[in-house]
Image (tube, rainbow, N blue to C red):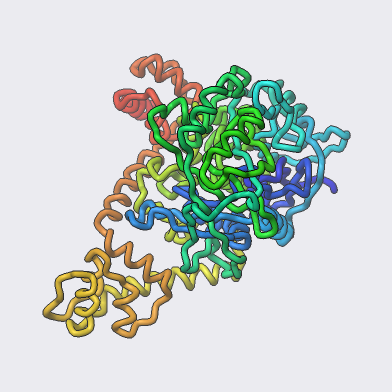
Length: 615
């Protein structure tokens, strides 16, 4: 195959995006993975999106990524979460067909000319003078490249636990772990720690009694994660909701000693926001019940994913407690749930390009950085992919500023603050929730996509037409008035005060429930629904949005105050000793980044600024 520009190790969600981004940057990319058949595999829940995560998917897509396009092709149910709340927290989520999703990812990658594939287990990193030279596989093959992106997920010394007696070395069920590369990386001086995560049992949907369960259908209106295509969605399927009860709690409590997590077999810390059923019973002893979602695995199978019952109890106990849940009294379990423990590298060892500080040309993305979730992995894959390409092409690192979107927040949180549990994105992690919306991702990342030349000519045309339509909708709202006899029937239906004189659409749309799309149609202005929806939010929340942009500019000012790379923090006697230690380890590149390091006080930042002025 010869020398390439970027090698990506791993074909999961981070690896797929890293490969696509590096190739779109003009690099020759080799995606090297254990099994080419599992590229794009959904290891846990067959769903894409959710709170904050859905916005990340749209940000990834705005830069030419894969996840949104694959989700649109595999979507078997869609819901816009939090629609009853403000638009800052609207969150698209799609239940997906596992097989369709995996095939869509592979198809999208194969459409990118610069991506090549190889199957093999990477055993060691080839380095020289502190820089990456390539990789070697366990069968002796060598692949050379100046940049390597490691996206090994839960495979690094992964170990599956089912009860106390069953421990299986595996990256996920049925697949071997990556041990040699984990051992090799440790010899390079990287700090390594352990996390754990888990998955629930799967059941045969034919043995579920759905008659008495709450049926949850998806939204009827059309929605696409992808901005550039409008593919036809597959047939849609419902999910079902049921609940645990006293009998399940009694079974779990009686068998806690048999749980790998509570019996002492696992030392790694798990995700607080996705607890096992054992965690729920122990942490919330007074809860009368816990919600359980029965989610379809795909169109060609009756198997269902039991969301809400992740566990590491023995299989027999899992079946016992499943059969206490309404609707599952006669259920057959097709696959037991399990916990998996794996290596990760605390991400404060990385700079903001996700490059390992100690090894030039080595980038890390996904769960190896201590995160959890497909979307967080994909976002890191984008950042690592474009920066590995930039490194290989001798370009400047690509910055993803915090104020631009969740991709920037994700990277900044990981590299500045680190993790003490598997990291998951939430809207609450953003200071700019109203400007970091799912509907404006294309606009927020347009300049970056153009600067890096990530989009094709056709994709840019589609984007520019949409942004022009949005701008036109807002201009029309400001420039067009509506007569009382046209507006009042609509206002009266909403219980709003009628108007007595012509009014600007921009003023009327600030009233609760008033639709800009309806008003534009009423005055004969044709506007795409998506453009009108964006304009409505921009107009209704204009004051709040302006304040957020002002706060973002203040943050940008701090970010532009660069800290010299040679700055000796230990000599800054006016800074607290604790702050000096943290600064020496984290090596922030700007005053803004330093201000977000846990433990640094405002007086520490002021002292740093004074020291920088004197130097």
